[in-house]
Length: 287
Figure 1 (cartoon, rainbow, N blue to C red):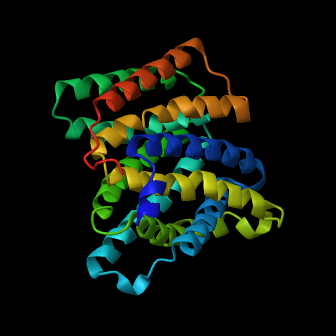
Figure 2: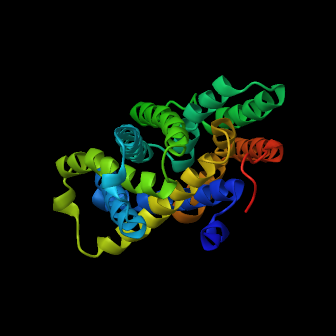
């Protein structure tokens, strides 16, 4: 029991580590798109993640109640749909823009659950950053990519809500592991229809394993742990760091350069996230 407590990452660092991991993974995933395609890359990520998490956590499926089965099924289906739709979005638009548009979902969630005036300040700053990052007036912007990113954002908000609920009725590691199995059921048929077996090569197994670790296994486990100990509202505002980290990942891994306005947006989002972090009170005592 003591070892388990010692290994648990505090809530806020867990969210920040999750962001860094998932955005690094997204950049790696986008570099694979030209060879494998967005849908097949998504399937590679989810299926490998499911295998890793099931082997590591060894969830006892027989121990789940009907309520837990229903909760984890919706969680996993939402997770799978969110992932494949987001990958299809960033295949059409820059990574930082896709993440910024996707964040609108959690931002709306944060607005609807806010009760203190100070919370609205951080949300407004984050919204200002998003407005600067997203070049709405750009005539060359792929409309389908924008719509897919917005849909992924709506699913992301749903994932936050479902994750918060499920973390209260079952172990986080078990929930993520079983949820990934349901997520695989969403992405695999789409990937097969998109030519997964036609384009897949054995040397891609290593890329798939690394992608699964960075983009799913590590971040989703960290997020489930954090959601159990902080409000969904706080989690959502902290996630405003996503576009900032995505911009850096896009720059380093994909050579996607940002304008001055977009860097200003990154600064606004960091300030909003820092403000939310300073106001956070962990509801669970630190181990």
